[in-house]
Length: 325
Image (cartoon, rainbow, N blue to C red; front, top):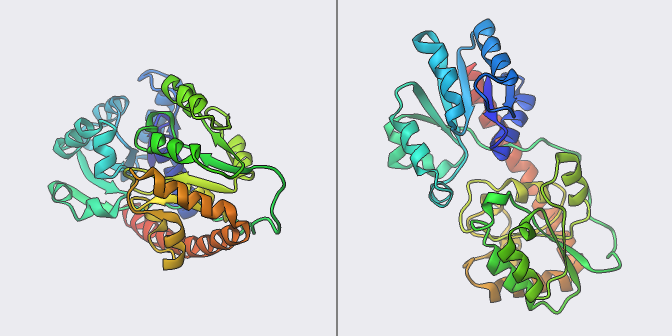
């Protein structure tokens, strides 16, 4: 069984996908964080009725504490699914949570989404295993057969609290100098007053959808020609994966693992060695906008490789979940 507060949208989505793909666990999402709330009562009753051998907690929040206390020593093996990289843990101010998890004797193991943390000294402090982020396979969607009229659609999608980690200012500086016609699609960046001012002062044409529910997000992705995810640190980058799964190329930093296995020619076109270099980023975006046919070929190549890699991640995750069931 897995349990996750919906305040961790990426982790919650990953655990939902793993439950659907493997059929080995039931996932419960907690949108009501109140200890005595309806969802919490249902989850506790379900735990007591089904008595699962293992419960995977998505991330860590104090709202999980009542579950551990009520279960006591006779409860399940509690494991925490940690989806952040070391850099993300630092930048998001999650080091307090992470250090507590490692010190808490009630937590039997930490499951990491980031393979690099598995090899770290911290992973030796408590039992650990790799539980990779997997995407729900969809039928391959070929890129548009011909260039679309009007401006190219560029996306910069991220959770509201991640705008700093996503290197937003450098991305805006790169876009401001472009000579090609485009419109930037956002999901909340302009709701931050400093970034809204920068967008206006730099003259960047944009449309901000705000935070999107899943169905709205899916429709927004269908309009995108090029994604931007030049992050300072990542463990997976679900947004990049969502683009690539649909054959949409993504300009990214070296820190985005989903591009790590791409062909050298594809990486040369998309990967920015120094995320703090907005001039190099602008040049990469400009080359891709200038050659739409090549851009679509790159997107198709990325999609093929991603599907191969995703199938391998699903096998790894399923084997682990089978051992834990």
